[in-house]
Image (cartoon, rainbow, N blue to C red; front, side, top):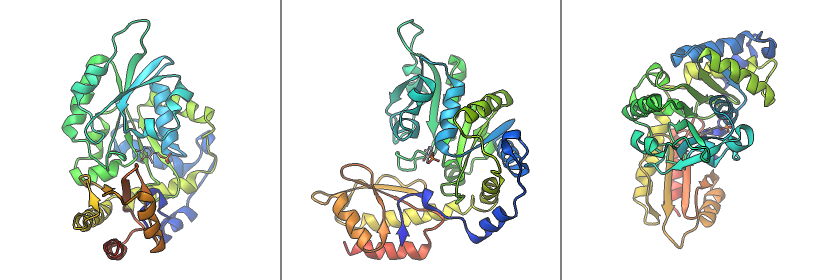
Length: 337
Ligand SMILES: *Cc1c(COP(=O)(O)O)cnc(C)c1O
């Protein structure tokens, strides 16, 4: 089976499983799990921050960040494609009691000018703009990357206007291996960031929230209130440490595989609007009368799974469990459609 559905599908490699078996563990609610502590210290240092918090999911890490950065009746400014808006069940309203101010950037990428123009004046009848969330790389934007310069401009504008800046970095390493920017250079431009260990990095479970001491102290309490305090979580944290040590550089292979698939699709008459491939996500449209349902059924008959991403749109995602040979095979299958 060739799984182009999502990079969440990756399974632990034998070596990662060995690292998990060997983990030293304790009760992390009492902060006595040495492996969780090591993962948190590693992530904080990587991104140039004071502290970090291991969370069960990227959604929880983002939702905790939103909760700590805002008060009820505030609003978060973000792109309309943002994961926090599209795919987190409206959690910003549920957990934090805040509104959302949606912008339409280019493939999910905002500019400082756009964000600044969206900040609401301080009237009693308006929500208070207090938080900006950017997503890098942007999933729904086709794995698009924020240029570092843009992030610096947004950061400056946020500081000038007293707004907090959170980075949804579920796929931050996909962006960084392409741009060559360092983890600290991006980490120090934001107040907090979340990263996923369970996407292309190949860990089975887990995300990490990074920020300063005071922010993470509050985040730890919110995580507990959400039911995210875990006990012997070191077995999972060990997978995360292994992933950070061994699976970051290889993300480039996933990107090359995505570009190879895009080049093949470009030759096919039933494909249109292939979005620029910057990382491991490939989004394109089917020429009518072809439909995602019919196309995905054809793929499934040939043991390939992918997803519909709109009425005419398909998404392919490459990852650790999609080999070069599988890409060649998928291209064969695509040309038979
Ligand atoms: C996957 C993802 C998340 C978090 O997802 P979980 O499934 O909750 O771990 C957050 N943001 C983006 C951009 C994502 O792709």
